[in-house]
Length: 250
Image (cartoon, rainbow, N blue to C red; front, side, top):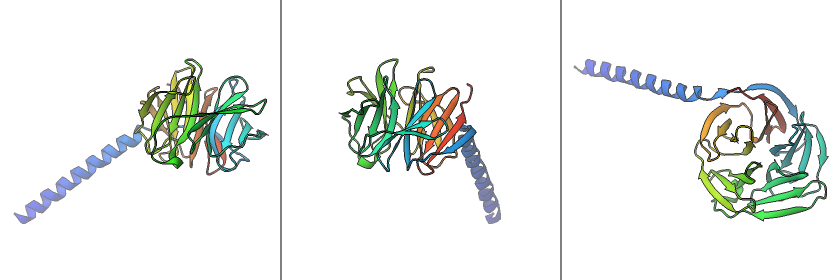
């Protein structure tokens, strides 16, 4: 009888392990891997955040090391360093003509930078988070509705939508990744693309932060994302590199 019990226990253990393995494989298989087209070294320390002009010919990034803003070619060459000196820059977005939006993490501010005159205007964002060093990590502009999207990195992970005057319309709790490090509003699909540094994923989302599709990427500390001309551009903070992926057809 004792032998029979041991056999039954071993058999049940095999079934449970097989079931768990199957479930884990199912979770992993839900994340397709994007096709890498190219990668380029960037001569910027700790680039964090990424923006692109409407023509898809020029990129912008910020450094959370130098707290400055840089204009890049689409192959990562530095074309210009702007005079603006920030505090803790973590995100950047194209805005209206000749203007960028910058995300200051610790002070929870969005800065409107005029690239021609160098003038800047700061807007404090009124929301609560638990850790100043896990604050605003990304910003993106929706020209269709003249609203803004920002990310709180974690503690808690939040997607926040702002009015044109930078007041909060709504905040949505995010729970599909370990952190949220970059965001891009895609006007053609009316969707958001959110990258996670710690989970190493790119996530196509609704405007309320619901995941439509997730993709795995082998990028260390990805902290910025833009999409243009059927390409997905991702910047790595730790590697100081620009990655270019083929945008999947759906």
